[in-house]
Length: 340
Image 1 (cartoon, rainbow, N blue to C red):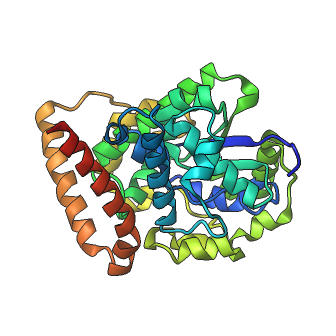
Image 2: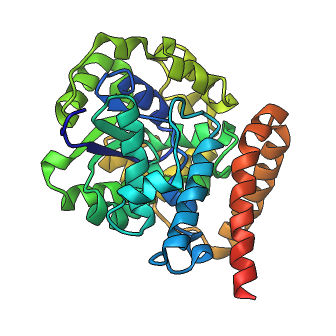
């Protein structure tokens, strides 16, 4: 490694937009470490009250230890990396969850002789206020036609299940990403559309390599043969496609598989954002807000569909997620106990 500084890349946007595909392609580059994300900030920022004052070293060490467990229990293993609270806290510049996040990704990169690390936890668009002072990463905004994102979420074991709530989430996350683009200097922000990645993978990855400071390698196109892709595909039903070559026709599926009513609803909620990102609408533009009673009804349907999907999850998938879920539940109980 020498003294070469680390380059941090934060992927932003909305899940189900091809982020695992892009992660696995970039992970093929010798200088890049792009592990499957344990979603450190999303999961632990809300849990910080359980640890008390992080300036108390034992509290900070407890936080680091629990985050190590989260990674140890990740459904897609972080092979070849031994983490400990002592090592992590000794490398932190201050006692904060974002410092632990930075150090862990740097340790992972270091273990692979890489100087570029990528976090594909796209929900971190919500934690830019933590990332900017601590890390100042480059931002990679990966976006996909929101109607295809909605279709994918409806089939997945995670996420919202009613088109209203998926459209609302997609609109909010894309708008946050585009707002960030207006505040970050051009050499720290890049946009990639999923559809362009499918159509022109080589040119898109070369463009990304130039942005992140990596040398292009043809191996990115055979990502599906890598151990990381195979391990990811075998770690959960919703990642099974990453063991296959790029599915070049995996776009505009919503027009064949979604009902007209669902397409219209998505466009009513997020039509302006679709147009901003270059996706034409299928129906005349109508952004009339839904009434509170309608949204309440959508919420009941959404919850029912989530329960139905959970009932279909294979025991293997549930088992792979159980240790992380149990860890987070135990920390939440600590918060409840502290508040009583």
